Structure formats: structure tokens, C-alpha cells
Amino acid sequence: MKILVTVKRVPDTAAEKRLDPADKTLDRESVETILNPVDEYAVEEALRLKEQHGGEVVVLCMGPASALATVRKALSMGPDAAVHVHDDALHGSCAFNTAKVLQAAVRQVEPDIVVCGSESTDARTSLVPSALAEYLGWPGLTGAKQLEVDGSTIRVHRETENGYDVLEAEGPAVVSVVKGINEPRYPSFKGIMAAKSKPVTDYTLADLGVDPGEVGTAGATTEVVDFAPRPPRQAGQQVKDPGDGSAAVELAEFLAGHKFI
Amino acid sequence: MPPVLVLVEHEDGVTKKVTFEMLTKARDLGDPVAVFVGEGLEAAREGLARHGATAVYAAGGDHRLSGPLTGALAAAADRAEPAAVLVAATPLAKDAGARLAARKGWGMLADIVDLDGDLVATQNVFGGATTVRARVRTGTPVLAVKPNSFPVEEAPAEPELVDLEVAEAQEPVRVTDRVVQEEGGRPDVAEAEIVVSGGRGLQDPSNFALVEALADTLGAAVGASRAAVDAGWYPHQHQVGQTGKTVSPQLYVAVGISGAIQHRAGMQTSKTIVAVNKDADAPIFAISDFGVVGDLFKVIPRLTDEVAKRKG
Image (tube, rainbow over all chains, first blue to last red; front, side):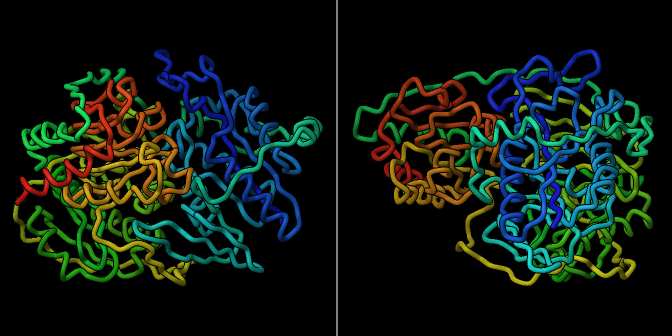
């Protein structure tokens, strides 16, 4: 089976992120970037599907030319090849632009299943997998904490408030997986070396037949009006417990004063 | 006034509070129209009326699947031509909202915490470090509202009941089983007004019982830090933080959590934060309204007793 896994380059989790005042998009040049942590689970899940069913795993990344490092990082875990969509016109794309472009790339690759991370740790909208499924006209199985493929049937366990639902659909389908679905493998030294020579196909918008006016800042369906750093929280009252837990009385007093009890 | 669609969050007709928050807010923007999918309409109807729904659009189908939710929202939008569509910022409702926006060629904003009369929405991004005001440029705005963002006010109305005609497309996704793993009773961490979270300071998974006891006394949800979840002490759906859930309850109680940046990113927009930690230098204290430096094994049981006593 042909498994396509989407990955995104995001600012490092610990990095201080900021918006560029000029165009109000995320300033991606000023911070360290990494492979979106949730996508590591998606890559791992794709590799497991290949181990069970054979076939190949293709990485799909939409991001600037410099995101090639992220593509190589994903490849070092073990996928066979990658598709990298980059085009200056993509800068400032909204979730729906992104899903549209990914859709066009998915149609080029013609996979049996698309595996996505449930969200990226930068924007965290989690809208892309759903929009991608809708544009493709494929079933969307989002929020999977377990994934299995049985013939043409794709089955997931989707987390609910107090357990999970078992959902099924016939492939091809878009599946988004949550953190914790598996234990992502670390790239081996061999994997890192091999990743350098794995094939990466570059696509521009023209290659995919996408109108540049429909994507990027020009085609974004949403826009930032203004933004401001949130004032940092101030430390409030602090008490030291004498060792017998009696500070709990003061804490309860505080909670009562704020009408929580 | 233009209609504003509100997708009802419910479980067999038991309506979630976030729906009433959305109905309350929708009254500032137009005529709130509730969109109800699935079983339980009779049970839900009175609450929707009491919170100002001028109409209730009802559709059949499984409300646990985004397909029927999307179909109902699309049919409701065709009928009402709304000024905006509000859905809760839950995974399933966001799934449906995204598919609606994609289907219609509209824009959508996720996880909004405020909304003005011009439909400019406020979002807390980058773990609450930056406040963004954004708007939808294309089509009808679809807005996913974070629970606890708007107050609930009653405004009784007599809603017109409308059966939605949803095109009978074969739903490609089926639910084959539903598994309940935990006893119900505690609110969902993403929606709760009070969250009590435990971290590595608990030392052992069995000590989450202390957190649960305090949570139950306060009527709170139980959260967990990434370290506690990664150690296998508590299930992942309770994880609060950058790679877990972002919460902004009225009260957040951090028990034995040092407050790494990734954790703070998931909870620092909480209205009030209190922390109990033995390390006086723990970063959590820098953002806490009330901090207790002390042994949680002494402080938390005493606090639970104290809360129970005051609640009578």
C-alpha cells in the first residue's frame, strides 16, 4: 500500500514565537525550527503500516525551501521518498489554502491512505486534516489514538471524553493521529545517512495546477487585524507551609474569597 | 437581525454549557439559531429556548460523526443565510466546522476567546503569550469558541422548530463500537470551570487519588502534566500543555507541577491559578495568584478536608 504522511516545519516548542509586524504572519526565521512533534507520531504510524502491509511511505511537506531539513529529518526515521511543495506565493497561507495545496499534491501521489498529525504545535488549529478530507471527498478519520488497516477498511479508535469510539471507513481516507498513539522511533545513524540520498520531488504551485492567487497571503480566508503580547502574569501571594499542611487553611480562605467554594 | 447558527454540543440531549455560552454571545450578533443533530431533541429543547434560541433546526444522523454535523450545518446555512456559524472548540465540532468552511469556500478561526460586533475574534496564540485579533475575509465566518470564554445569561424565547432537510448522502464513516473507559461524573478537562492537575511531584501514579479527591470536592476536572502522562501515570486525554490540551478555566490548581514552559503554555490563560509545590523556585509560582510552598502530601488532603467543610 502507498502511505502518504504529511509533515510540517514548526518553531521549536520551547522557542519564543512572535508575529512579524510587517505582514502579521509567524516570524519563522528568527527561531529554531523542528519537525512538528505530533507529526513524528504520524510518521511512526505510517512506518508501522508499511511494516505490516508492505508498500511505501512518502512524506509530504508544504513549506519554504529551508523546510528541506525537516523533510530530511522525517526521512531519517525511515520513509522511502518525499514530496516538498514550496513556492514563494505560499507564504501566509491559511489552514484552508494549505489543505487545498496538500490536496493537489495528494492527487499527484495517489496514496491509499494519508496520515497526518492531529495538529501542529504552532498554530494548533487542527483544521487541516478535516479540510483536506473534505477537498479530496474522502472519509476523514480524525483524532485517532489507534489505527489499523484491514484490506480496504481503515479502522481507528478516536478519543472521546471518557473513552473511545471505534470508527471505520473504506480507503482511501485521511487519518489524523494524536500524540501518544505510538512511540516514535529515533532516527538511527544509518537512517540519517540514508535520508541524505532519498528522492525528494519538488513541486511548485504551477506543477500542481494551483492558482497562486488562491493561496498565500493573497488568498488567505482569514487575516490578522492586530496582535499584542499578552501581559505576563504577576506572581501573587505565596505562603510557606510550616510542615503540617496548615497552609491549606489559608489556601482555602483564598478560594473562598474568590467564590470557588 | 441576521441569524447566527450555533451547533449544539450534547450527549443524548444533555446540552453542554458551552452551547449556552455560544447562545448568549450569539444574541449580541443576531438571532441565535440552534442546530441540533441526533437523538434527544425533546430533552434539549427547553434549555435551548431558555437561553434565547429563536429557532431550533433539527437533523437526524449520528452526532458523534463530523459528516452528519457538517451536512446539518450546511443545510442550516443554506436555509438561514447566517451572519456567522459558532461551533464549540472541541475536536469533533472543529472537524465539522472545518469541513463546512472547506465545502462552502468560507474561512474559519479556531479557538476564539472573544468576539466583537464586527465579528473580529480574539485568539490566544503561542501558548497564551500573544493575543491576536483576526477576522474571516472569505464568506461566512465559522468560529470555534473555546469553552468558558463567554458568560451564560438566560433570555427565554419561544423557538420555532424546523426539521432540516439534509441531502441523504451515504455517510462514509461508521461507528462500530463505543467504549467507555472511565466512570463518568467528572467534567472534561477542556471544558471544566475548575481543573486540578497533578505532576511528577505526586511521585507515584496511585497518588493521583489525592488530586482526584480534591477535584471531586471542588467539582473539578482532573488534568495532568506531560511528565506525569509520559510516565504512564494518567491517561493522555487529561494532559494539559503545549502537546496536550490548552485550558482556560476559572480556577487552575497545579499540584506537584513545576511549571515547565510547555505546561504553562497550556494553562496560563486560566483566570485564577493556585499552586502547591515543595520547591519555592518552581516556575509555576511566578504565574500563580496563590502559591503554597510545602509538601503536597500534607497540604492537599488538608485542603480537600477544608473545602469539604466549607461546602458543608
